[in-house]
Length: 356
Image (cartoon, rainbow, N blue to C red; front, side, top):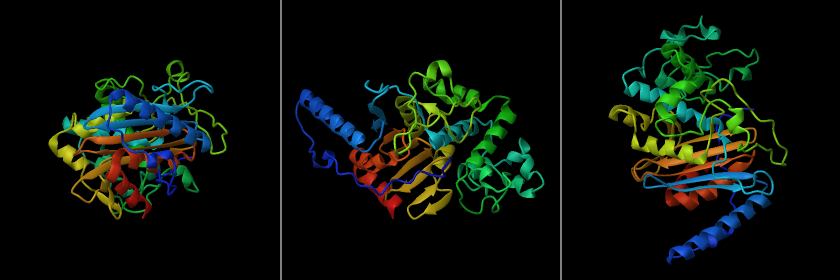
């Protein structure tokens, strides 16, 4: 079942990490300390029935740490290139496809999508002419999250586009269809040309590849340890089910912070609030924006499906960030401590905004 957003848990975990002090010593001692922290974290995972956690840490625009905790298969350490279904963390990738095309002058943020695509369900509603890429990426379409949530299973407007915020996967899918009509290519092909190939994201795709994906895939579980059936998509979904690794997605986020392939105006628009979602938080173009209170912002997005809980937070000014992929329904339990452990006061501020 698709969920609208990831909510950072109120759980506080009382692991040994809070009692650790940083050791300023030789590299060998620091390496030993890191191994001890990793072992203790994996023990916490076992106690909390979290099979896998993929962690990426970005410092000053460089990928400082990539680690996948847990086992795969049982009894063997999980590989650091483990593949995860990242749920709605797919959406920022789709957003960047559109924004790169805008920066190249091949797409327009404010052109009606009706010029390229109109869904039959809303063809007779004149409000379809108001839909634009800007409105989609800031979640102001007026659509439900998914049409199947409606009693008649049809797409509809629940309010006038551009008047307020409502999270919607349907909006991103609407944008996908317009892009594919305009360029005569699939979203997976467009993303390959604009993002995956330039960044050497060789393990990332909107589409399941049985030969490549099956052996390294992190299967999803419920909180009682029951494994879900693996989702194997053959058609790209702009809002969900991207397959990727921690290192691939971290490189993508570094590229986002650098504004690679974006014009100065588009880069600034991406980081600028388009609609307020709660105190201290808003949506820009494809990314949630947290006001960190000192002139800095954090960009973020989360994902939640059956057996999937994912999150990233990046800080464009400092070029620091964190990527967290988990493969269990309550994997969000790890978010708070990892955010505060690796992003310090900024991580605490994000948690504070989420848990108000």
